[in-house]
Length: 129
Image 1 (cartoon, rainbow, N blue to C red):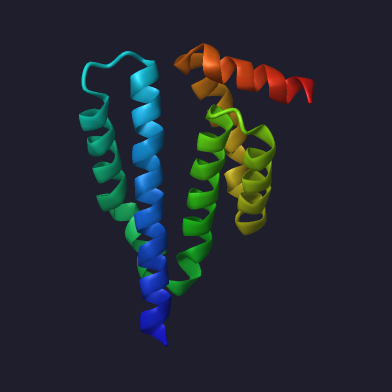
Image 2: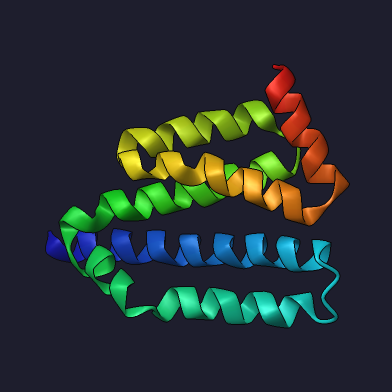
């Protein structure tokens, strides 16, 4: 039974790392970096092997952290693509998993101010809704 929990946690960590890659690539492209794929790959690799994440992957009780990470980063990506309602649903699910994922709203505002017109339009649409 424990192997199933561990495998699920490992799968969630892999999904979170891939979402971090996607988010980092989008941010680095918006910032005008010369090689955004390489920088995003490095960011995702650092995220994947960061020692503080080992507890979440190894312990069954760490699943809440992994779910909050997947839902929070997924919410940010959807928001950046202009899918505000879907992003709000993922954000709410993330908050239900772990309250600290409520801070995603702060990161979305920061990303929107750094990445350009597309994200700024999404922020303005969310404020108007």
